[in-house]
Length: 102
Image 1 (cartoon, helix red, strand yellow):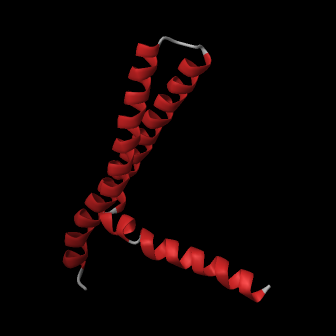
Image 2 (cartoon, rainbow, N blue to C red; image 1 turned 180 degrees about the vertical axis):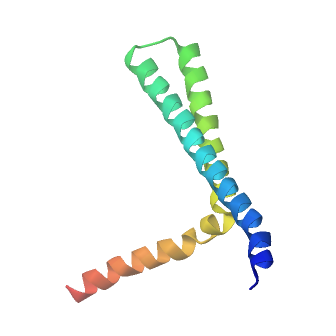
C-alpha cells in the first residue's frame, strides 16, 4: 500500500474511533442517569415520602431503566440482545453438564 493510500484510510479510522468513544460515553451517561434515578427512588422510599412523590420517582426510574436498555441495544448492537437466547442456553447447559458430571 502506498503512502497516499495509507493517508486516505487514516481519517476513516479516526472517525470510527471518535464514534466509538462517543457511544462509550453515551452508554456511561445513560448508566449514570439510571443509577441516579434508582438512588432517588431508594432515598424517597427510606424517607417515607408521599404517595404522589413515589409515583413520580417510580415512573422516572422505570423510564430511565427502559431508556438504558434501548441505549445499550443501540450502542452494542441489536445482535447482542438477539444472541441472549443462545447465551442463556449455553449457560444453562453448562450448569446441567456440571450437575450430571458430579
